[in-house]
Image: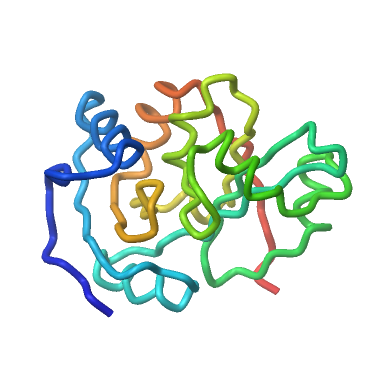
Length: 180
């Protein structure tokens, strides 16, 4: 897998959504490191990138209720299994399933494989509820894609929680998902 050198500035040429992510981080004074890499299609690919970042790339799942009236972006450690019933019980929403790709594009301005907390920048109507696993919430660093799975970035979780999320008007629900 191709992995670029470490960068500490926004890419010179980026598509509009990636550029918007780095512009937001820069305007908020959030320092980051980033890599460019081959597309990461699996959590195994993300683990290799996470190792280079000295962190863990989060697994991000875009979910909805059966009526597609409530949308959730779950961010959790990549090595934790996801069981719908565990999450449903903690957030009080039954019958969760994966949201259609069109809704991800509409609400987060990205596509499957590139879902990220950074996509909340584009959820200007606040239709998506962020749900964070406690292990991610309590970690020192947060690693994710900048809305494109050809790159990854690492920021302090405290900057995510105290600067980025307030900027985009989102507050996470914190859940404790089991490891088994």
